[in-house]
Amino acid sequence: MKLLAAIMILAVPAPTVSVSAPDIANYQALAEQDLRLAMVGHRLALANAPFCARKSRNPGWVLHDKAQYPDAATAQAAFGFRLPVAVSAVVPGGAAQALGIKPGDAIIAVNKVDFTSPDLVKGKRASARLEKLQDMLGEALDTIGTANVTLMTADGVKSVKLAPLAICASRFWVDAKSKLDAGADGVSVRVTAGLMAFTADDEAQLAAAVAHEMSHNLLGHRQRLAANGNSDKQILETEIEADRLSVWLMANAGYDTQAALHFMERYGRRTDLGIFSAGTHLRWKNRQKVMRREIALIQQAVTEDRPVPPPLLAPGKM
Ligand SMILES: [Zn+2]
Image (cartoon, rainbow, N blue to C red; front, top):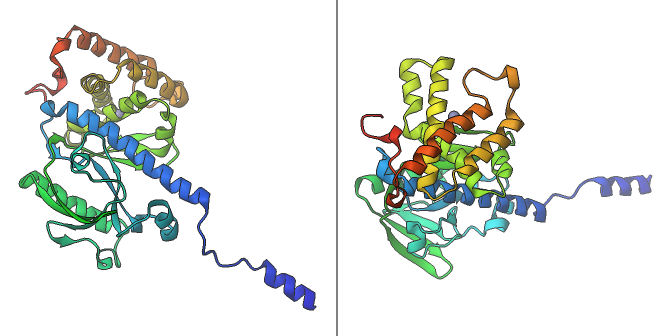
């Protein structure tokens, strides 16, 4: 009886106080994917800025909030949060990098508004504090053109004046789903973790997927479908336009447009439903044909005079 009691006590799992190395690695891998997507998105949005009707001043950083993570102790171990909101990654060539901002620097305040208070998330969604910060910062940058940011860095408190360039307005985020998918909601571009992994060894193929979704946003497709109805035929039209514009955006950003054809074949072979395909998308070989026509036009355009204006974004075409 005594022995059984002892075994039963041993069998009760101890409360987990430590965090596991694989969990830490998973959190860090997610942050790396955020950076990969931010870098590709920034490169496309910067290079094509002259042709975007809607621009936004983008600091070229990725921020994260400790509250977003399911396990605070793992998040702390993975990223060493100095304060609840911190810079998780800095895009090479962006404004944040030029100011010497580094991953791990934490946000104390934006234009004197304190973002260290736990009250900003109390009783709200985990993303509430970061959303408030992004909205405030975005509004300041797009109206005044600058924002004062106070950071807690490895060397102590540092104040900087962000004054980034205006580039094509777009946000980019990695959706944790494993399905091969991406989407555009008129403002943001979403890429699933599954699609990030599918393009893991080829940045230009990731750029092809991002450029397609950015094209939907730049061409106002969401708004057009909402206004004119969203029959299969109308959706198909927007899909063809996004495929056409995507290769121009890629070429202007210095990506090899052939990667779009390779991506389409790989993605198509994996996801094409054959005769069961929806009427909203062309089959992958036909999508390649649409892109090849545009690639030929790009090659005919004056290549020394980059960036080349994409015909679909010409004034009057919007
Ligand atoms: Zn699409």
